[in-house]
Length: 178
Ligand code: 5GP
Image (cartoon, rainbow, N blue to C red):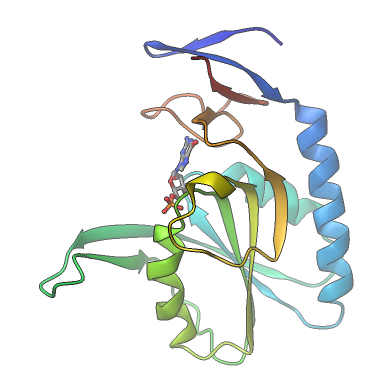
């Protein structure tokens, strides 16, 4: 692995494909154990999590369902400012064991605003699996139940994550070279 360029910026190697895959196997084993006999519903948040969600889901041995949603944010009419809503959530969450699949939790803003909407549907349980977390960037603390890697507060691309649309198809994760 060497330095790569995406658009106008340079990125240096950070996590190899085999490191990512090994970590995903461990997460899948934990999920297999914790959800044995439960038929959980995985909800993957697009776009960034599509590769992680697919790889994680392939490693599971338990019966499980998966659906994909996109989040849209727009200015609300109330003082709270941005409102985040799900596009494509057509499954009833009532009584389900839900597992949210995120690529990366940065400030925590997205999940902080979105999770209450899901909880409103009264799932039996709701946990979060995230591939990456930037603890130093936390503004809204989010309990991440299954975490791939804690990373420094640097911009990363690859493995589903983009820089202005590009870089999602890179098999490894690279971080911004400064
Ligand atoms: P948060 O709401 O937690 O601040 O941000 C979450 C979203 O911001 C992620 O789902 C992702 O789309 C984007 N994001 C945050 N950090 C990075 C990063 O380092 N690289 C990329 N490509 N996206 C990021």
